[in-house]
Every structure is written in C-alpha cells, then in structure tokens.
Length: 214
Image (cartoon, rainbow, N blue to C red; front, side, top):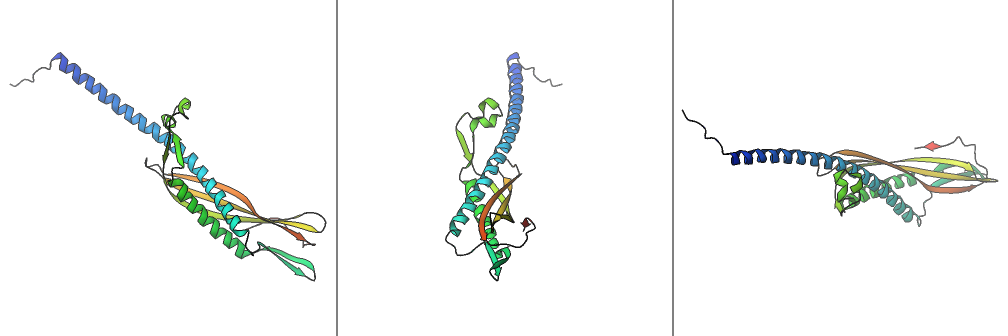
C-alpha cells in the first residue's frame, strides 16, 4: 500500500503561508474593486451632472449669441386700429430654439465627456474622506446616450402705465445614460431654466390669463 510522503515542517509552513497570502489577496482585491466601483459611481454621477448643466448653459449662450443679429422676433404683436389685439409667441422662433439648443447641448456633452473633463483625485477612489482631494487628478472618458428636451413658458405682466412685459422662459431637461469601464450604468438627470426673450409691449393689451406652457 502506497503512502503519501509526509511534508517537512518547512514545506508545511510555506504551504500554510501561501494559502493565507492568497486568501488575503483575494479579499483585498474584492474589497478594492467594490470600494473603487462605489466611489467611481459617485464620481461619475457628480461629474456628469455638472457636465450636463455646463453643456446646456454653453448651448443656450451660443444660440442667443447667434440670434443677436437675427431679424426674427420671438413675439408677434397683433394690432387692430392702433391698439394691441393679441400677443403670441412666434412658433418658428420656438422651433428654431428647440432644434439649435438640443443639437448644441448633445454636441457639448459628447465633447466634454471624452476630453478628460470627467476626473477625480486619486485619493477619492479609496473611499476615505481625508484622502478625497489627495493625489494627482485622473481624467477619464465615458460614453453616454443623451435625451435632451425643451419646454417653454410665456407670461405677460404689467410694466407701468400702458406698458406690458412679455417673458419667454425655456427649460432644458437632460437625461444621460452613462456607460463606463467599470460596467456601471447610471441615469443622470439635469434641468436648467433660462429666460430667452423679454419684450416690452407699448399699449393696452387684452386681458391675460397667466402662464402659457408649450
């Protein structure tokens, strides 16, 4: 009957220490991956929310700058016999705003999410508060699928004797589905409102019922 040779004490200690080392390594790698993944998720959400807001602001500023020399008017004032009979928003202007701001916002998000704007200090990945802003800044890119929608509100208010002030406020809603190297899929939402037109109307206007949304 064959017998398994007994291991020497030294070999038994080596095997024991090797098993302990491997177990500790597996636990450390697992903990590190979970900790880094959690921190990475928070960093991505925070950064992408900022990018969505910045991309929207830049898009609106660019559109308004391009419209400064345009002959188009956002508000159509209809008169009858020298008095104001109706005040309405120009639908062509609204469509132009929607198209331009949506396209510019999407382009800005694509550019900003791939040029290293998404970043964090290396210490942030440890999950320790004291190390949040410690270490070199690491930039990375993420892939996104964007949905950008625009809604509008128009309102009319008194601005003095025989004068009224017409406002057009646009709200831009951004929904981002974010993909990244850690296989984290997150949805980030951001909403920003801008007054894109303000028109002074001279003359008595018909009674107005409040805010129009479209």
